[in-house]
Amino acid sequence: MPSLNPLSNAFFSPMIGVFDSGIGGLVVVRSLREVLPEHDMVFLADTARSPYANRSIETVARFADEGIRRLIGLKVGLVVICCSAAASAFIQGKIGPYAVPIIDGVTCAVAAALPVSKKHQFGVIGKRAAMESGVYENLIRDQMPDARVYTQSSILLDTLIEEGWATRPETARIAKKLLHPLRVRQIDTLIPDSLYLSVIEKKISLKAGRKVNIVKPWQAIADAVKKILAENPEIDRALGKTGSLKIMATDLPAGLKEKCEALLKSRVTIECVPAFSEAGHAHGCLRD
Image (cartoon, rainbow, N blue to C red; front, side, top):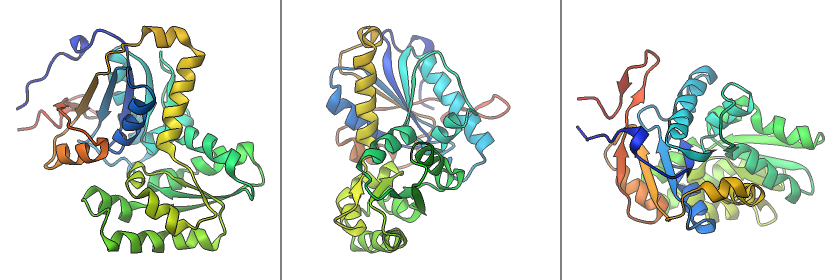
């Protein structure tokens, strides 16, 4: 069983906290480190209970709240929510408020999509929970009432990418098939809700059509964090700036380290921390 450091003593300077149900959020971490290379960051993936996409909103809210509060307990200065299911719970007021600023990926993606759409025809391809929640439609239409929003699940692509099939011809064919219904709708702006899709960004752009604007949520999140820190220098001044990155996961399934390194494009060390069940009992890394 891995040894666990006391969480309350793990860090001494405020960091940027990043939360995801799985490891796709490391794409956001990579973008954050590109625009804020000196800032200390901590990433928490709830791998013991991932994916959140097939769970009820109440369960997602409970799990996400636990993860966010764990990060806040580690003295973070702000928290980024990468998981769109968790972001949906936050947007709907199912979790929060919190003592630190929260930046959610769904809001960032929509903010990046609105200015580039000329025909107000949007496509979203991503996780089932976010598609079924209507969160994208609601956010877009709140600011653009005449907009049309069409959605498509990306579960097949996510699985192929996670298993290392990003460069296989089968993946390109499935991307084309999944994007076809959106092309038929003549969308002019596409939001890849699943962060795994960043790995096949060029394929997505090609199959969506050359006239379609492709939003990059991972970059939109990083830009939003950078802007918030610029507008709130008191938060930025308090953050640690040694360029450190701490990666934590609530379970260490086979191949996790290699998958993390592929997404982050660098070597990683992962600390295993316990998840907590509804009854408050630790599980995941602490199992036999």
